[in-house]
Length: 87
Image (cartoon, rainbow, N blue to C red; front, side, top):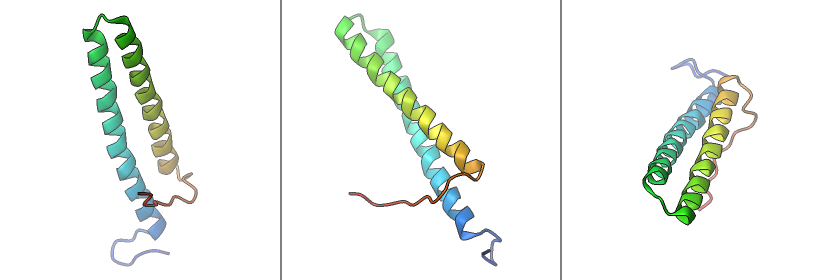
């Protein structure tokens, strides 16, 4: 069903909102990756390097997951997306 004012279906609007949220999350994950990577380059303490590398790599996993979800939405394979307030 289409909204007469803007021509977009409710499903399209929901997908755009979810995609917008995911793009903000992606930027935060990319910033975190860069932060940990910079710290990793600046330290020579082995245990700290290990921790920072693990944290950085975890951010990369998040980045890849979010990119995959954005692609799914753009290809129309989002399924039934719902946003729930869980706090």
